[in-house]
Image (cartoon, rainbow, N blue to C red):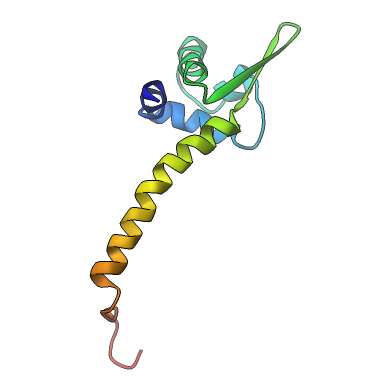
Length: 107
C-alpha cells in the first residue's frame, strides 16, 4: 500500500480522483481543471495508475481514465478501521456527559 500513500499525499492527485469519481475522463478533459502542464498531469496519472487507484482504457488513440473502485474501497476500509476505533474511544470517554450549549439560556 506504500504507493497508495504516495499517490494520495499530493493535493493535485486527490483532485484528479475527485474529478474521476463520477466517471471516466480523458487527459484533455482533466487538464481543463488544472493550471499545470499536460506533462505534469500525465505524471500525476501515472502515479495514480501505478498505485492502482486509477484505471486506463485505450480506444484508438484516446486514453480514458477512471477510478479503480475496488482499490478505493480497500483504502476506505483501511481508514474506517481508525475511524471506528476513534468513535469507540469517544463513546467510552465522553458518552455520558451532556453536550455544552453555547447559546443564551433557553435557546
